[in-house]
Amino acid sequence: MANHQKNEANEMKKGEVVVVMVPFPAQGHLNQLLQLSRLISSYSYTYNFLNFIATQHQFKELNSGNIYNTCKSIEGCYVDLLEGLEIYGGKKKHWALGPFNPVTKMTTTPLRTNDNNKSKNPRHRCLEWLDKQAPMSVLFVSFGTTTPLTGEQIKELAIGLEQSKQKFIWVLRDADKGDVFSSSSSGEGRRAQLPEGYEERVGGRGVGLVVRDWAPQLEILGHSSTGGFMSHCGWNSCLESISMGVPIAAWPMHSDQPRNTVLVSQVLKVGLVVRDWDQREQLVAASTIEKKVRRLMASRERDATRKRAAELGVTIRRSMDEAYPFLLPAEIPKELPSMEGCFTFEILNFSTHQYEFAKTAAGDLYNTCRLTEGTYLDLLANELMNGSKRQWAIGPFNSATTYRHKNSNSPDRYLEWLDKQAPHSVVYISFGTSVSLSDKQIRELAIGLEQRKDRRTKLPQGYEERVEAMGQGMVVGDWAPQQGILGHLVTGGLMSHCGWNPCMESITMGVPIAAWPMHSDQPWNCLLVTQILKVGLVVREWEHREELVTSSTIEKARRRLMTS
Image (tube, rainbow, N blue to C red; front, side, top):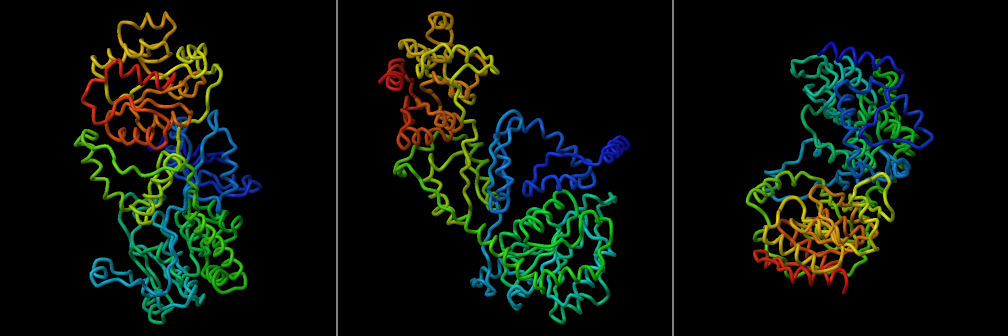
């Protein structure tokens, strides 16, 4: 197996360029895309990583679009390009939601905390060291956790930093277990060796601080004393630095980092390159490092770079505070449906255990939009989350294309049947896949639908041949193309359990809903549809969920929805 992988990897290296669709942010202005192609070589990625990417293509055909940890202030040109492309036979949505990291700048004065908080959450010593430094005077040096520098390169870096006479914080992790290119399989860590007496010497003079364990990178970058960042240009590190307005000395190691370097240094012009990617196998001398640090921290060029970085950081932070108008005069209902019967014990127990993970989240993604639930999103952001979490409403995920004519690429008999009906004359009936109606309820539903002469889809035993022969309806016993049916011009209503996906699909297509909630979030969705958005009516109230819905009630609901 190992030989097989090695041979395949060698075959890949024979080509000059390997073109890979990568789930990383794409960088560059349009006239630089050709220049970037030379960076995508088999030397940037491991064989296993390339193989993983190749296996993901089949899933891309099923998704609604792509979410990017970026924003239009940083990559607007390329996001616009992506939005105009047809991928896998159709256009995909592209959501630029970043940066996901907090973007609050710190002052030199530490936040006041009571004694209890101090004992529980003591500040890292590097932050206390930064409090004593002048504004924008410190270079932060960190290269992530996946690829360590060689012992020889560490010594050259140490000498270069000291000779630059610029203050620095250097995160020099002891372990290299995360090295994705390491030939060692032992998993043993090593302690990086510095010149003898180096840490004591630079620390004693107040010139630098070497941190050999975890360091609070975001807080360091957000500190007002930090004036530069020497980085491997991993995307998270780039976003954190750019959003804090801190210029970057780029030292790419692998993966997306060469392209991130081009974005930082050539496109955004908020940094410089320490080592060019085509010289990645060469040792970077201490004299080169000294010159690069001085350029970033103490040259005339520094002022222009810092100004651009600061302006871009301000733009990004402002873009995250943009207000979106809510166009519907919605109100928060004072009385909500009872939770009794909504969720099983297993679901409630699962939800409870998720709270621990929610504490570390940057925010929440919702399959909704502000026109539908803007009031609730504002409530979540301002009251429940106290502004500490971001709320992204990026729905609907479903296609919003209506079908006005027969789709030649979809020969489903259901759509062919719909093509023969009058506009808005058919009600589509579907209750999802998680709850089945009782036999008695199915019979009542069948009778209630047949008593009306309106078109409808999906019904029970016995009269299937009769109603289809009469041209009154069609019963579908297997999967049906729900979005195609809802998007068809002749569909005039949906009788549904009010699962959120059917709600979004129906609302997107402009189809009113006859709501029949069964469990979970469906009672609340029913409330939204009928009382707030007023795009539907209730077939069965939630408090009557244990009662049989008679055929006469169903007939009245159908009449109200379709012909009243």
